[in-house]
Image (cartoon, rainbow, N blue to C red; front, side, top):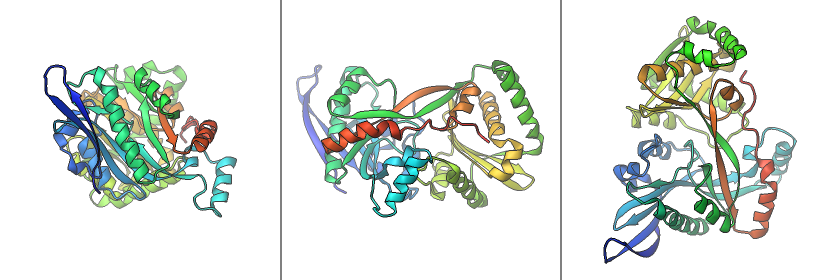
Length: 390
């Protein structure tokens, strides 16, 4: 794929010569440098090697893109992106509306399915905008919109009628939010980020922070700990097929299905991020009942996927056992924040988590369809898992 570029001359205030900003869209993160990319995301865990694992995972239906702004050949602003066919009912819970859409799609295959070009990644926690160190806050909105300009042009070239920005943390800087609105972007709430600061020194101290009813319930659920063996592994080995079986069964039970991950994704995370990833595995005897893929940076632990045999794992309360196992890992390794993945927020709030809001921004090329999408967007938002974990 040829690079698509926009150029804009800029005069730096500190020097007299004119410099040029060039924004491009490329098809592989390998076309960019690991060090330069990671420098733009100093607080992120899902950096170059994580995105490379995603790119190489062979996830069906997705084309990967990376948007970059350079100044005198130096990378100063970046975002990952993707292209795909997007079914508008993806975020709907199972119910009459979703069933009606699926019934119509049985006759009209592309009903409510749009070609989407999206800034962000389906596999990251949020849609972060990366800026090189030293880029002044005052320059960032202009750089972001140069990045957005070239991506919108690329979307038109790729015949994507819908352009979006996925899971931007709220609130956005006022100038960026206002400019997106002026460009015609609408937004709706997407999956929030659940996190728990490790401000306690022991599990007993943590339990004391919970309500008496929750504390009593957790102590009861944790009685199964002696019957389960937990192993931390840096490689899946011959257990990868079983982990994929657990993942696919867990995915099938979920209301929200966007991307379907592959064995190369799970294996790639551990191989490409050996110092920053592991899998916690839960055994009853020699049988693997659950697996929990984690990534970290020494300060924050992110729970990427918890996969469980529902029938055999439920009697052991493995979801709650994994929660306390992860908190214990944080305590033992000096990690100060546990980020617990998406969905099932009611349980996470009950267990002390806080939520940071995210939003999806979208714009259709057809003004009439954009008006319609604005009107129906409230219907496309579910409660994202505010239900009990069985």
